[in-house]
Length: 215
Picture (cartoon, rainbow, N blue to C red):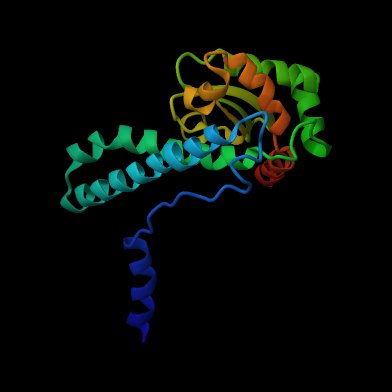
């Protein structure tokens, strides 16, 4: 009986469930006119799905290399794990950061923290927009929480680098500035996309993330 009880949890450790593409909490057209349905469909069902699929492949190869003690292959797989793992993490947050009922300004503790750390909501919005516009090539603009300092912080990450895994900041709000997030609608004018996205920011979700990471 004792051995039987030990087998189940050990089996759970060695058998890994594959990552899956999360459903959107709204329809592809729900964020129009700010982000059109064609962008949302391609972004979710093609781009995010590709990160998920490639992450599963990379993890399977890593698992095999681990079993063989093949450190060289383990090291060589790190970029794929970081890129595709980051892509999956970042987009999973991004979809929930958006809402057809979004926009406006946050309330409660999050708003007080924004005023404390950035002076005003207007200053915060201006700074995060500027950081996001200024990302060279592809990447993300983020509002994160610095748990050690107990303060909000703005940061930019290149490519699909995940915020927490590369900076230690806990992600609250991410803005995707890869061209696939806006080009079909806004062409090369990233500032227009960033101006529009504030109309669909889900402050309830951002506030919930803030409350959770403060615990």
